[in-house]
Length: 78
Image (cartoon, rainbow, N blue to C red; front, side, top):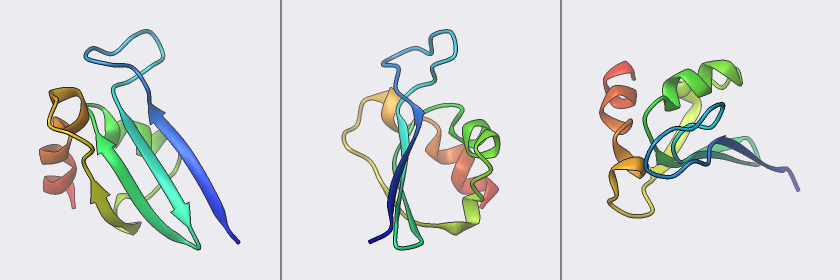
């Protein structure tokens, strides 16, 4: 079974030094699932060499800004 989780950001509310707001990429059998999309998610995807167009599904855990404010920028890029 192929499974990996990449933590793109784990800081709450505001970014901290070397920690961006919430975003995780789950790779399950080659399908990519983005869980939350805080600000700077696009930059983190680039940093980890994850192509945004390969993301199959996007899940937002809840509607606090630090979990979804990067979504509009990501969607406009796609």
